[in-house]
Image (cartoon, rainbow, N blue to C red):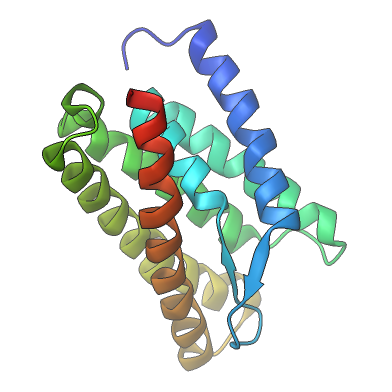
Length: 171
């Protein structure tokens, strides 16, 4: 975290582009209105775990902003802020757990996924629904049901793609 430099900036730029591409063009319908299974959190989880909370926060913000803006319905700020929170928290927890130094071992995979689950729970089960209620006036029931289903989908997608990318990176 102390050595923020050009490699972090490059990771943010590359991560934002990949996040946008996956978030905009590669999603699966979940069957729940306004909810898709998205794989872009795998990219964000890798950037956050390897390059830290600042890189994760900025990549989450920029990537989700671009995804939302590209759909034409306007930027959904609760999602942009929640993606930023996910990136920042996942980066902090991963840094504290020394995920990067563990390598692609059982311990590294476990720590990576503990971090992403905690981060997803905080971002999508707490921050996103509360902001949906505050910013958009959504009913609490609607906001929490929608965002809890997003949480589950994000955890699974991140566990699959994020772990795979983490393995590729550390090897």
